[in-house]
Amino acid sequence: VSLDVKATPFGAYDAAFIAAVQQRWYDLIESTRLSQRTGRVILEFRLSYDGLITDMKVRETEVGEMLGLLCQRAILDPAPYQHWPSDMWRMVGKNFRDVVFTFYYE
Picture 1: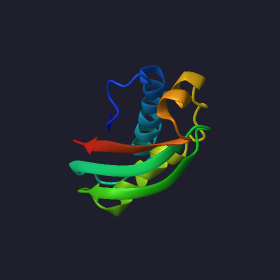
Picture 2 (picture 1 turned 90 degrees about the horizontal axis):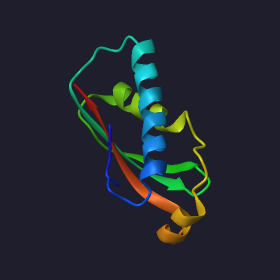
Picture 3 (picture 1 turned 60 degrees about the vertical axis):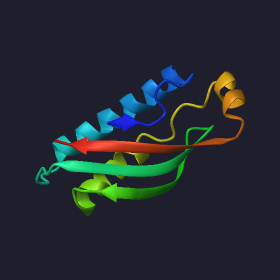
Picture 4 (picture 1 turned 90 degrees about the vertical axis):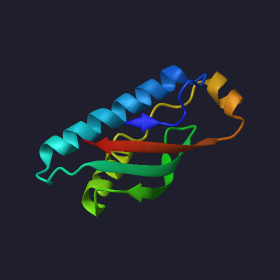
């Protein structure tokens, strides 16, 4: 799993977000009987200050629709996430962040 906001001043928040998504993704993979293919899924979405996810779009999938949907669920199921810390909100300067999240099936 990779998030393209690496090395931001929001490291602790991003690390917790990634950990939640990653754990849910692993749980979903384990509980399904979908054949494992190799490739990636790239999702775009907005993460709002209150931890809600909106405007999710599939930018790319190399592994088919079902595994792409599993990635979407990995992000949506744990929501809402923690509210942003006040410093993060001030630095972002708006009520949301546009995020690109990439999942790798190997």
